Length: 349
View 1 (cartoon, rainbow, N blue to C red):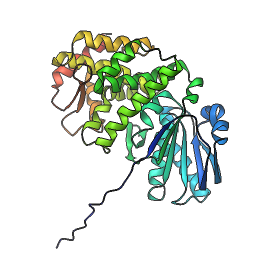
View 2: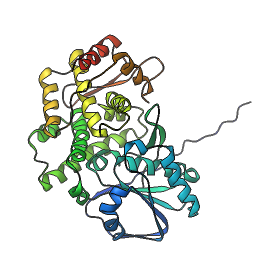
View 3: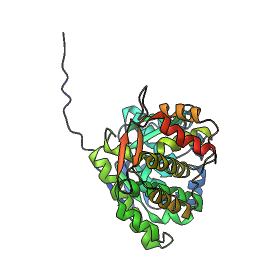
View 4: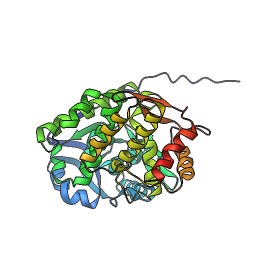
């Protein structure tokens, strides 16, 4: 006997991304702001001057990628249960990508899903991590291997937050901007070559261009069944770098920068990118003091870690390979011998 359940209904997950000074808002429900001590010291008072609610709570978790784990998720969930949050309650993520990912994941699993708002405070989270609904946490096997697609109800990008951003964090955000330009928009990449991101007006325009690019891709492929996977350019290699260094040596964007250089070398060997194009990308990354070299100790071990990537299957690794600048190829047909030759060359750094 078979029983058919028809689930062909359309769920509207649309939301607005606002790039502007925060406006005052009142929420007629219980609200929890999730943040860490560092961000709270810099920006919590400003957010509290803009946000009020029926009941408002602050939940802090430790700062750093190494704390993007089950213990931190449990801290958030326990506080929500203690304060008797319900399905109409709301979470607000105040912080970078780590805070946004964990807040979104906690929202996705608390009572099977509640709403959350992204208030990203780093360049990386403003242009990339806060947009698209990817949520999750890390474990001993790798980065973001546990998580869910859970879209925010709003993303509020206030460039004011970037005034306190350390130069390394700023560079990490630039890496994600370069990633989107290389894979989808050569004109944008050419603009970045001469753009002065210290100019506030130029920076705001770059943020808008990057957010539009990410939003357009997500609109086409919300659950990453196709073209959205191209936004992982640099990540397949970069996640292994983060894993090998226990998430302590590199910021996420820095690891992605290294990963992009590795992906570019793979593309050059495949005849899909010229040496000049690869060098142009590397020079742009270096302009913002991003790392472009990495000493691989064991190429075979590095390669095997690829199989923990969410896009890979039991026997094949999916790579995101740039095609020149402005094009991209998602493929599981890169020969191991070719990839190993790239990894071996980084072992010689």
